[in-house]
Length: 254
Ligand code: HEC
Ligand code: HEC
Ligand code: HEC
Ligand code: HEC
Ligand code: HEC
Image (cartoon, rainbow, N blue to C red; front, side, top):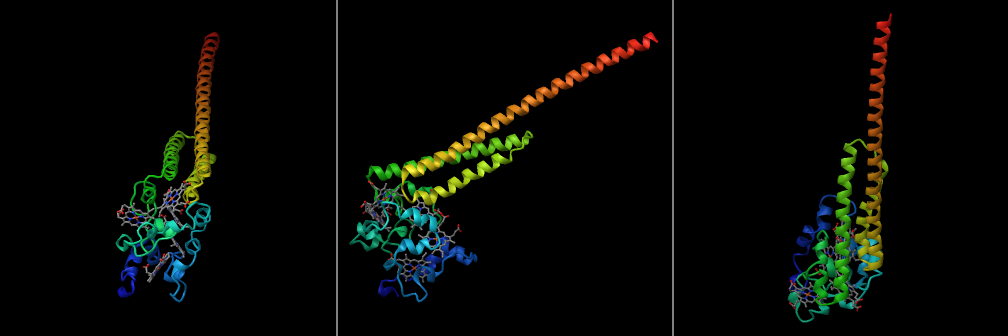
């Protein structure tokens, strides 16, 4: 196939990708060749709407991506900048929308590193000196890290509180909700709608603050209860002592 410009290692590369691995592991949602190419293998996804191809499964992400300044832009293709240099297109594809950042048959687990540096597919690859995109990437990066840190701290505090005997079903729920905030921010960040992303992350942080506050209050209640209980215990001891004295006095009288 090589002479016709089709890379011979397509299948090998696919097998090592997240999709290929998921497929081999029998994951029911994983794409096989036909999911992206059509049943007859004759449809190159390049001529179809790629957002729609990937969006068959990554629905939220595609929906958010459609709102971004990247969606459908001709300049999102590798060849927009590497026109004459085929060697700079080592992935063997022109790149378009989703694949411009994630690759095609080589897709790996996406992580926050893509927001940093200028490797192929990372923000800085196409935005070498553009201020707005760099600021956008930094905002997403800082925001998610702050939420992650806050969640880690809240989780520790929750566990410590439980060890002390506090029962906090509702707070567990709040924590799980902010975990969801972190999961949903990944599809949402494809919109590059920075105010919406920031607000979403801030809401997640506020939930942490509320949980910490509730923890503090419940902890204080527990302490107050302990003080009250030890006060009561002291009072009982005193009463018992008085009763014993009284009993002694009565015995002496009789
Ligand atoms: C997740 C979607 C997806 C899956 C699964 C997939 N492909 Fe592709 N394939 C693409 C995209 C996207 C392109 C590039 C189109 C473009 O932008 O020019 C492509 C391009 C190709 C090409 C043209 C040459 C090249 O590599 O760019 C061949 C051949 C090909 N795929 C074969 C396969 C085979 C065989 C499988 C199964 C082992 C497979 N594809 C699985 C999305 C997929
Ligand atoms: C038929 C369904 C399907 C199609 C079509 C599909 N994917 Fe996937 N994708 C999956 C599944 C399943 C996983 C593995 C999920 C897992 O194991 O966490 C996955 C994983 C991924 C991941 C890694 C997710 C992570 O957690 O970091 C990326 C990135 C990705 N796909 C991008 C794409 C792109 C880009 C396209 C289009 C070229 C595409 N997918 C087409 C089903 C699909
Ligand atoms: C907005 C312009 C732009 C786009 C789009 C673009 N590149 Fe680049 N690319 C550059 C610049 C600038 C350099 C660094 C100077 C050079 O080596 O030409 C570079 C360097 C490279 C290099 C060599 C150094 C490295 O970072 O590994 C490769 C490989 C490469 N690009 C591949 C790609 C692929 C694949 C795509 C599509 C997914 C792509 N480029 C899209 C601008 C772009
Ligand atoms: C401009 C680059 C870029 C484009 C274009 C892009 N992504 Fe992403 N994608 C990322 C980055 C960066 C992350 C990792 C975000 C993180 O970890 O915070 C990511 C994460 C993901 C993930 C894993 C997390 C999640 O959202 O479930 C999937 C799946 C994914 N992208 C699919 C897609 C699909 C489908 C498209 C096209 C509709 C697309 N991406 C277009 C940069 C991009
Ligand atoms: C493959 C190249 C490529 C990659 C990778 C890429 N971008 Fe872009 N970006 C573009 C193009 C092309 C435009 C649209 C320019 C236009 O409006 O015509 C753009 C526009 C933007 C804009 C709007 C710019 C403005 O001044 O309004 C932002 C913000 C942005 N990108 C952020 C990012 C972030 C964040 C990442 C990484 C997650 C990223 N980009 C990765 C090519 C890329």
